[in-house]
Image (cartoon, rainbow, N blue to C red):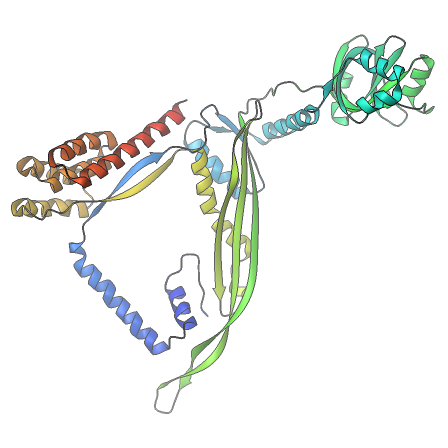
Length: 457
């Protein structure tokens, strides 16, 4: 049974060789050749110019400098945990609890509901209907309105709907509230002046089993109905500065394909291996995952950023589908890539680049001394290596030693200190490599500064 995992490796090489029709003996020869090649690379590794890992911090791509407390609304626990960990690790952000997220969701729902409301005085509304109900319906019926007035009556209809009657002379505006508003309805009293937002449905015909209609008729006045009303929410009162919405969508499919391969079936009478051409069926499980995200400010509702991060992977087996990872296992493995990309959008991210050191080709004495410094590099004693290259550069003023000292200094003491050294080398030697690397150092230093500013605001 052959199986390709997420990282590839020997199993994938074996499967690919069989798919290409390479026979077993040839496969073995190629494998031996690969071992010899690896051995040769190891033998001659001393000829390879060493490189040094240099770390810097890449600033976040999104401007979240005014954000400190964040709520995460996600349908995937793995995504929530990873983003939370990366945000809190900066020391700048804190994660809001589920109760804070729910409170914002409710406020946001009400805010969206009331957003299209047109403001009109309750007296003007009643007057418009008294003058011409047909014309008033064309202007107001079915529309969201924001109106206010003095409370004349508070009650409940026979159908169980809570209402408040806003007095307009002998007439009124009857307001029927959404269930979520009942606590607020219970807190008001007759005579209070209140403001409400709801849908206007115009004049209503009398319903003798409806308390509101009975009150209207007894009052010998006309009433305009406002239904599904809420109290205006005002500005968001919570402490959450931004909400990150994450929605994941996985697409996992399993397919089959048949490939003709040379398969070992046994040995003949002389002990020689016997191979036969056979059709082998492979089972592929291919997965893709999208993370759709949106980040909004809770105050003002402005959009900080939105988009989609994606990843794909596939696994195959020539045994049967039961040997393949489950769809959920595939999704949990491939989610790492888009999560890393998404985190890079929101928080400064530490990056590592590999900078190759320079070789001395002209000055034999310097070259001999630099070989000792190179041993320190291979032993990853970068600080001692930098000091060694610095002494060689002071004696011979050769480009390679000065360049290497600057590169190693960036890896041990930081980019600012390295820039000072590389500027001197570039000025003295006028080497293009020094100038190019200096520009890269300056770019990394700028990134470091921007990242630091993002976290300090």
